[in-house]
Image (cartoon, rainbow, N blue to C red; front, side):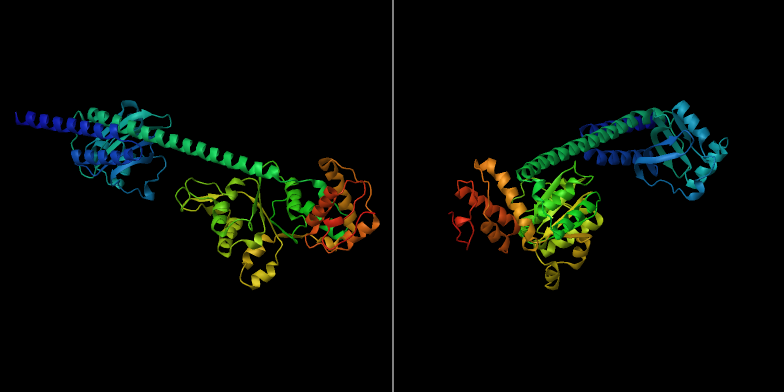
Length: 464
């Protein structure tokens, strides 16, 4: 009578355990599932009075597979256990055939000497393995291990089946939640990337680029173009040096169009046009809430240029405190968004340009020497317009030809004195200034002869 009462007590305790485990796991969501599974394994360990309860598997060759979840401490597995053949193919076969494997003491394994020795080394004296599902190469299931001999109740496997089903279903649900979240994150990332790329492409389209503007017969200018053609097909970092208005941006685009990345984005950043407080976010992005005003996550220009090319114009104006972060991207292709500890990795070709004297900035401790050498893998110097005066007539007629249609006027001649005045001027604004002067003169005159009039500061030529 006492034994029946004790058995009923054991059964009722187990059924309460099943109810508690089920209630915890059914209501758990997301990361709560992990904690709930751990709690339930601990409850089972306490219920059975054992040292470990684990969810894992065994390969059909007899090797244990890595555990999915563990409560307690699994017996140590030293290198001596890596025997060949594996220690438990016979046990695995019985496990797969009968859906369970039970032993209460080491002597129960006399017919499986290889596995018996393996188990002795592990320090396990009694265990129950319950099979949940056959995955072909291995079987998933639950293991309850004891370091001391233990008599297992006859219905232990059936009881394990009830709990095991609930536990594994919870793990599958958690796995599905993670896969769904990963898929959602990837979709969100792609959406952000596409939106940012569209914005950038619209901005790039606004930039007028005509390859014909890169014209000239001077040796200095043809040398620069030849260097651009040499480095274009490579992935090397390029540093373009030259005064304002010499065409550094157009040289950068010539290099980009000849590269293997021409079908990927060309992302341009003007380091001088952005406030120092915003340029880090512009280059590397930020997470929502990273700073006041960061109401949404922002993808930085480096991330947007992944697989493509980034052109850092006016690099000499980059704040000194950001230069180390840029150096890291150049060296390791890694960075973190502001407000994030996650390291991003990008494959981006870098081109940079500046009109400033970097050697002087280095002497003033305003520019890092290591960054200068990293950027200057392939320097290209664009000559100023006063260094290529023979190209001025070619450029003048190029601008006239291209502006006539837009302005609705025709110009057939440029008097020699006008051309002389243009070629003798020093052009501090270089090609950009020349283009502006020609356009201004064409707006002020009806044609067909180009005169400078008031279009040229300091020049008082007039039509006659």
